[in-house]
Length: 348
Image (tube, rainbow, N blue to C red; front, side, top):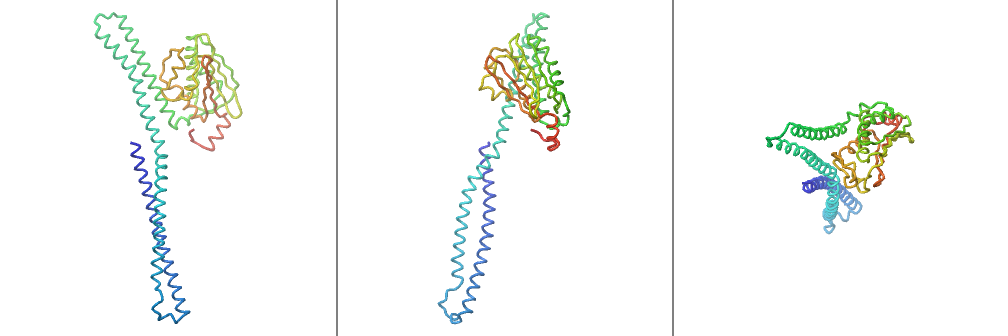
C-alpha cells in the first residue's frame, strides 16, 4: 500500500516541479527571444543608418535568419535544462515522498501492532472465561464449592480485562492536551508518600521493605499522574524482587531538575531488553525468569508518557541478578513555570 502511495506521491511531486519548470522555461524563452528580436532590429537599423550603401544591397543577411538560429539555440538549451530538472526532480521527489510517508507508515504499523496486541491480550482471559463457564455448565454434578471457585476465577479474568481497559483509557487520556491544564505546584515528598501508600499492601504481601530518602523540592505537574508514575515503578520493583529484599525510593534536586529514583534488588533486565521496555505490550520475561508475574506490558509505556508530558525523562539501568534502578527527572518548579510561560500548551 505504501509503495504504491510513494509512487503516486512521487509522480505528483514531479508533475508539480515540471509544470513550474515548463512555465518558467516558456516565460524565459519569450523574454529572451523578445530581447533578441529587439536587439537585432536595433543593430540592423544602426547599420542601415550608418552605411546607406547597404540599404539596397540584396546580399545583406536578413535579421530573421540570425534570430531563428539564436532562438533555436535558446530552445535547445531550455529543453536540456528541463531534462536535467526532470531527472533531478525524480530523485528528489522520491526521497521527499519517502520522508513524507515514513512517519505515516510507522504510525500505521504501530496501530496495526497495537490492535493485534490488544486483541491477543483480550483473547486470553476471554478464552479462559468461556472454557471455565462451559465446563461448569456441562458438569451437572458440580458442587456448590466448585461453582464458587469457577465464579471466583471468572472474576479474576474479568479483573484482568478491566485492568487492561483502564490502562488503555489512561494512554488515551495521556495523549490529549487536557492533562496539562491540571498542573499545580506539588511537593515531591507528598507525591512519594501517596505512591508508597498505594504500593505498601503489595510490598507487605511479598515481604518487601520500602525505604525512602527525600529532599523536599517543589515540582509542577498533575498529582494523580505523577503518583501513578511512581506506583508503576514501585509495582514493577515489588513484582520482580524476591521476598526479604529492599526497595529504595529517593528524590532530590540536581541542578534545575527534581530527580526521583526507585531502586530494587530483583532479577534485573538484560541489556538487549532495555531498549524495548517502554514499548507497549513489551515484557522482558526472558530476563526475569526468576519471577512469575502477570501483566500486559503497558505500565512502563504509561510511565514514559507521563514523564514526557511533564517535559521530563525516564531511564532504566539494570544488571542481571543485581536489580534495576528507574530514574525520573522533571523540571523544578521555577524552571517549569518559566518554560510554560514561554511556551503555553506545549507538549513534549
